[in-house]
Image 1 (cartoon, helix red, strand yellow):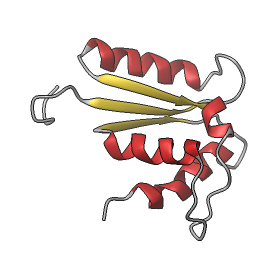
Image 2: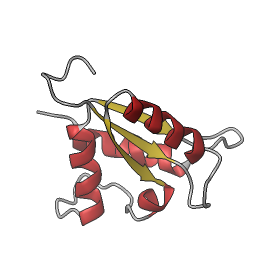
Image 3: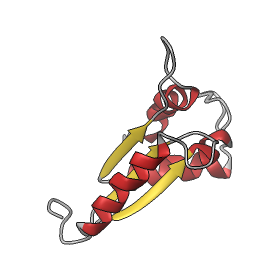
Image 4: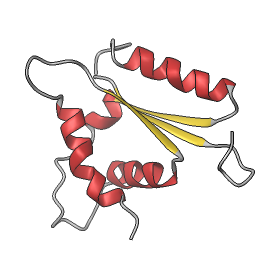
Length: 108
């Protein structure tokens, strides 16, 4: 894959629900498999992983292992895919949580 300085591109997929083989996780896993076939390194952070994350509080500086893993993985990524379940008139808690955490993975 191009644009990575000669190394394999790293693509992270984030999403799904805690339901095994959730309908939003299946296409996410498929997309990551396609990226792997094109030579990318991939990582899936699924609904079970997201469920371990506490509500984001920017005032709290002592981060859990899962929080650090999320931020470090996204910072390292060349690309990110996000899949969320469809809810009536709202976004999933996982998508909302990712939006809040996005301030933590911005590079200064």
